[in-house]
Structures are given as C-alpha cells and as structure tokens.
Image: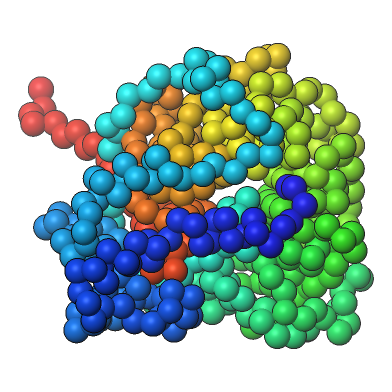
Length: 451
C-alpha cells in the first residue's frame, strides 16, 4: 500500500457520500436538513427533511418486495431518481490509481459476461450497525463465522451482529487502553493505546486485528479480555494491511499478517509465537494460503503478483498481467484456481499449473477490485469494487454468468459464510451506512411419481 496521506482517506470518505446530495432536499424542503454534514450525531439523518426524521430503519426482504429501497433511501423525496444518481456515480466516481492506466487497451482483454444471475437473494439490511474504513485501500473489515453471525469494524469498536436476534454486541473496544490479561512471550505488559484497526480476521473463535501503526491484537471470542497484543513493526510506515487465519498442514491454527514494511509474518495461536517472517521487494497488501498449505499468494505495491513457498517464503512463480497495485487475493477450494484483484479495475483468474498468463480477466464498473471471496463449495466467487457493486460469478459456468448487487456506498468488506449460505456486505456511508445480508437461492427438485 502506498505511503498514507491524510487526503487519501478523505478521497473515499467524503467525496462520494449520499449526504453530498442533501442540497437537493434543501431546495425541495426549505426548512430541511439537520445541521452540518460533518456532525457525528446528525450523520444518520442527512437525507431526511425536518418533520420526516425518524430513527434509521432496517429493511426486510418482504419490505423490499413491496418496493422499499433496500438501503432505505427515500428516492421519492429526492430531486433525482435512482437511475439518474446511478448514472452520475458511474460518470463521476474517481478510481484511485498508483500507476497510470490505458483503459481502452485493458477493456480489450476483459471477458464478456452475462448479467442476470440470481444466486443470492436480498434478505435483510440493518442500519443499526455502521461499518467504517480506516484506509480507503484496505477493505477486509467484515467477517462471517456462520450464516447468522458476522463481525465488523465500527470506528474504534469491533462488533458482532446476529441475523437471528438482530442485535449488535461489542466484542473489542480499542478507543482507550488495550491491556492483555494473559502472559505470553512478546506480549506488551502495558498494552496499547487507542488503536486504529486497519484490517482484521475472525475464525475458529479467534479475532485478530491489525493496526494502522503496526499493532497486533488477538482476542478469543469466548473470553472477555484481550489475550495478546504487540507491535509487528516499528517502521514509520508499518500499517498492517491484511490478516488471514488458517489451519496449517499439521492441523495447528496459525495466522499470517501482511504489512507495509514489506514483511509477511506467521504466528501460531497457542502461544502467539512468531514462527515465520518473510520479506518481499514491495509493501505486501494481501496474502492467501493455498488449500494444500504449500503455497502463499502474495500481492502488493507492484504490478506483478507472487506465488511463494509457504515454509520458506521463496518465490516459485511470478504473475504478470496486472498494471497497478493489487489489494485482494483468494484461492478456489480446489487448490488449482486462484484470483487477484487490482487497482486497474480487474480481477484475474489463474491456474497454478500454468502461471505464465491469466485464464480470464474480469472487470468491474467503478474501479479497483478490493475484496475477493470464493464460497466454500467453490460454486461462486464474489468480488467487491471500492463502492456500489459486488459481483458474484458462477464458477461452474466458467465465470460466464454473474449476479450484480447494486447499492450506494463505500464497501468496508464482504464475507461469505463458511457454509456458503449467506453473503454479508458492509456499507461505509455517513448517512446510509449499514450491513447488507444476502441469502443463497436453492433449486429443489421433487419426484412427482415413483415408477
């Protein structure tokens, strides 16, 4: 990830909010609007006129079928239609690029796909939780542990939300002092102070959060206190870019961190011991472990990607084709196909048996592909753009058919539940920030008669 600049955060957080269009409401309702757009207490009500302000409401599938906007946006009260606003977004949204792109040439190699799949159906949207983003290039801040349970970052808090109770619970608060309650080698005795969580992962009862200054925090979900916290690096640009929790080839639980100091570190989860540290030639933005635990897919601040040996960190293949920095990667469960997501607006699919060229190039609408997830059964791949669009591809149809989930707002992260039954999308928007839930569609076949 490129050196952080304060204006970069503003690029994503401020330029494309629904609140920016509240002026249209003020024209229509002279007494409308509730205070300054930057007022934290008023953010939820930016698009509502005085006299019509209510507590942000959730949207169910039944309400959506009756015509309610899934995000609760009152299009009938705005001076523009949803279609017009979509057109404006597509024209005006600025994709962030570290390297200049030749888009016409790129479009020539992209796969033509069929829109119209209905693999996952809208189930629920809750505005009770507010996903947030610390750095605009890092979008791995939503994690599902079941089809009913999801964890997300909201300001200085990691929260759990349940589709059953529809209630949120705070799991970790990092606004003040974070002091570990257990004794492990490397644990900071006096803990950490006020950490900005830049990335996180939740799996197997463990939450691992990485910080903007290189902090590392580990907490078991069934324990009230933090178990471990330390500094991954004291590098002045040591932001933690990604975390992955996985089972090693021996069956032990490990996690891997990717950092801007060009380092990839491997820890065990029993004693939180550092058991591996590999360095690469550029800041590492994301890594993914292959299903057989032999290879690690590494992407970062270079146009090329790498396949490296999981035990030694030695590069075994270089992946060439992208034209900007990459921030997303994922393996298909078959261990043969893997994907990389790049700021050149594409996701490339690769075959581990022949890495000289990518198999397919898939393109989004607005910009960078910042998150990629395969379903556990391998039937679907979801890829998220920086805002507004999540695309779901049918892998068994050779990625020819896709479902397009269309909404408004920056994407804090996407997650497919371990059983592949639900997809969760975190929408980071001051006014319409929410958590979108989609439920898998199934086709059931019954015998009408027995012969």
